[in-house]
Image (cartoon, rainbow, N blue to C red; front, side, top):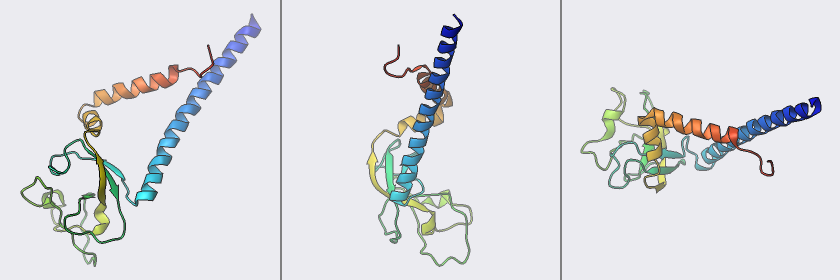
Length: 168
C-alpha cells in the first residue's frame, strides 16, 4: 500500500505544479500581449473604457476605445483620451483644450485647478476604433466590487479544479 500512496501523492504534487505553471503562463501571456500593444500603438494605455457620457453621441458609456499615439500634432476634431494633468511652467509644447461632444463646456474642470491647457505629453492616444458596450463588464466590476471578487474566485476555482486532458 505504501508504494501506491506515494505514487498518488507524487501525482497530486505534479498536478498542483502543472496548474500553478499554467496559471502563471496565462498571466505572463496577458502581460506580454498588453506590453506588445503598448509598443505597437505607442500609447501607455492602448485600450480604455468610456466611463461617462461625455463622448456621446460618438461613443457611449461602456464602449471600449482602441488608442494609437504618434508624434504628429493633435488636430482640432480628433478624439483623444488624456491623463490627469499636472501643471508645468515654461513648456514650449502646443496647448490643447479638450471637450466632450455631449458637454456644453470644455474639460477644464477635469484639469488641475491651475491648469488651463493640456500639452501633448498628457494625451494617451487618439481613438482609432471601438467595441460598443463591451466595457460594461469593467464598469460593473468597478461599481460593484463583490461581483469582481466572485468572478475572480470562480476563475481561480476553475483553474485549480481543472484536470489535464487525458487524465482520469
